[in-house]
Image (cartoon, rainbow, N blue to C red; front, side):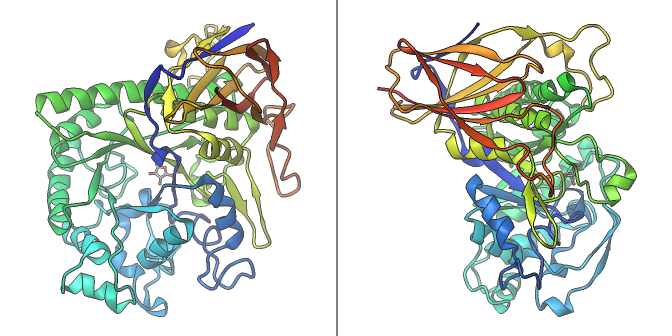
Length: 497
Ligand code: AHR
């Protein structure tokens, strides 16, 4: 028997809806054939796939990152503005494709408006120059009678776009990145870019390019850029063919966040930085199948299992628990490319991971609570863990509570949203849920993502093999009683009197 205790007075902090951000890259069929398909009966007059837009809406996505990813380090934004027929078709070196440039800055901003989301643009610090980055900020945000602002006007956009979030390059530490750099060289270059961008628009919020949060790269970059940036980014993808490694691997994010939080705190103290520096977890997801060079050329069309959905929910629990530092997170990516939505020319289906992401985006409330969970734990037996995963090894982070929970409430404490992930592969776990200092009202609603087989996937043939179902929650005196099925995700809304 497990016990979950909720206390609306034990508050961790405010949850920034920025954790439900997204990411779209010019890679495979994410943009072309994903969100954007000109001439399709499924698209509107702008070329935006209507069905995809509708599937993205329930996320109420606060921020969308673009255009990469590795792609951005070879991207010259000027190629993607102006009359579409005159835009150059370029060789694309990050993913070995061809870039038609039919979707560029103006189309991206239009897409963000259609979705009601804030744009987040990453600048090219690989093959790009600081002049180009400066010009991009001016094109988007410039209000003066100057060349790049006037070019935007000439393209039919009188009012500035007011793009608030700007990333200083993508994964510049990686050998796979066009123009990769040492941490020291990145700092020098990023300071120059940042200065030009801020002088162009002092209101922009800059994101320094981090690694996994725990690397020397992160420390050197934070020390070098703390005075200029508002966010530091982390990227971690997880996953394994072995069930327990797969569902527990997201705890690497716990490690990453703890170390990165400490590094930020130390840097701010040492350097006497007054402004806060938050973490933008601007690429995260499960991704382990489509990793080979061939898969990369084929556009990373990962098919997600129910176990992967369990992992995704665990990531979200971790972001909620770290809400004081994680103010943005971007699920990578949105469509077709390691994504919750898969399209064909005729339609689309929702992958397993769509469901927890949507449930959390819909039901998570404003304030994170310090939820107490007493339950059985899981520890890896010697030799059992899949140590081939990257980032490697999580056994030292265990033993892991089999039920992983995150709770949030509204500011007044009148309703709690409890999210529970049961990572036990075989067994349901029955739990008593108690709310301290409050009476549980009704109705209590529970939404569950579950299926018999943790390896089941959705597909065009079986689009709802994994779906959301609503379940009854039992009353046990003043408490609630609920059996969480094996390898399941449950989101509950509990009114408190
Ligand atoms: O999201 C796929 C790729 O993963 C991104 O382009 C890159 O930033 C990361 O390595």
